[in-house]
Each structure stands twice: as C-alpha cells, then as structure tokens.
Length: 335
Image: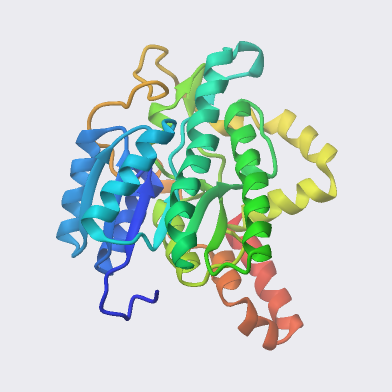
C-alpha cells in the first residue's frame, strides 16, 4: 500500500472540486495516484482533473451528489472499472448553513445532514463493500474540532460532524472485532482557508469566516496523506483543535460561556454579507474556486502540533520534559 510500489494508488475523494478535497487531489496526483473525483460541480471537477493530470496523476470526473447513495455506489463501480481496486476512500464533501437555530428551516437541517453525515456513511458503505472482501484499504473521514464541540450559528454542521464521529467509533470497533486489515481514521481539522465561506448559505449580517487560527487547506491535505500511510483511529490537526476537544471535555460550561461571548463575532468579518449572493446548499455554485478561500494573508502553512502528533513515538522516547516544552511552544504557535 506504500507509494514505493509500482502500482499507483487508487483513491476516491468526495468534495474533490474545492477546498480540502482539491488540495488533497493535488497531493495524491504528485505521487502518481489514480483518483476518482466526486462532487456536484462539473466545471470545477474538470479543472481539478486538469491539475491532477499536470501533476502526474490520472483522474476520473464523476459529477454527483453524495446525498444519493445509489449515485455514490455507481461512482465506486465506475472508478473500479476504470482504475481497478480502490485503495483509499476519503470522505470530505460538506455543506453548511450559517444561521441561528431559531431561523433554520427543517429542510436545511435535513440537507446538511444528508451531505455532511449520510454522505460519509454512503461513501463508507461503498468503500467497505469493496475493501472488506479484499481485506485491504483505508477510509479517511475528514472531521473537525466541531465533531466534539458544537459552536453557535452552525448547529446543522456541528450535529452532522458529531454523527460522523459516533458512526466512525462504531465502525472502528467492528473492524477490530472482525480482525480486518481495513483501516478507518478520522482527522479532526482546525479552521481552514477554503472557498466554503463565500458559498455557504448564510443568514449572518456580516461575511462568514473560519474561527482563527486559520490554516491553509494544504495542511489538511498533508495530514490526510500522512494518515493514509500511517492509519490510526484519530488525528488532531492544529493546537486549536486539541484545545477545543480537551477544553470541552474538562469544562464544557466554561466553553459555552466563552462562545456565547465570542462565537458570533469570531465567525464574521467586518464586511456586510450580500443576502442575495448564490449559495451551494441545493445546487453547486458555478465556476471554479480552487482550494483556497480569501484568507491567504491570515492562514498558516504548517502546524507544529501536527508535526508533534506525527512524531509522537519518537518524541515520547526523547523524554517527557522535552515533549512538554515542545507542546507548549506548539500550542503558543498554533493559537
């Protein structure tokens, strides 16, 4: 399964047209992978395919909606017909709505759940159907600190990410019970500079932004690549993610009060939102947005904390005192 073998890895990426999926497609292309690109926006998928081929990979464009289980299964069949057995399946597609709960519509909750949670379930089922009989493969769930800690104005998305976390725990245990060599890993991501903040449906008065500290999507792509080669049950990316998870375990009421005070403004910029701009909840937004959002000036290109996480065995051997010092530096750097 390592990329030193002559056979290219066959990789499926959902939400491959932009953001983390786009950055991940580029990263796998550089190792010559054959990639099934799944998303709704045909135009952006074609742009992704061109990049993949320029970087030395091969790509198959499959415009579809992950909320449709039959479409996910058909895409999996098409990828295996074209490229052979799937080695890696990356669930990443998402939609969200920025809105107070009291202004949300029931069908908005349903739609976010169908894409952001059930889309992961359907992708996982299609992957397992193929990987389990072969006893080989890695499934990556692209998660979030919000899988552990709900924040205001994003209830539908936070609920869906919590659901992915619970589902993945159950799968993890079943794979262990069956002594399967198929691996599943969930990567909890920090705030990322992706185009989603310009096309998510929003009822906020000002333009949406990721809660700082913000990282480039390439940081997420690097973490995904690492987790595919070194699967373990879970990875945290960014000191902010670790802090959110641990803080919520230790003192959730304190986090509630902190977010009540800061969580509304930290998710918005100073600029007013255009209430009539297009959003991608029901249909893709046309055009190609690439991997990055509009926060390049504020986004970090690496995570000290994730470097520590990758090398935790080595660091453990280097002595607890040193690790403590490094972790303190990392938390300070990432926050």
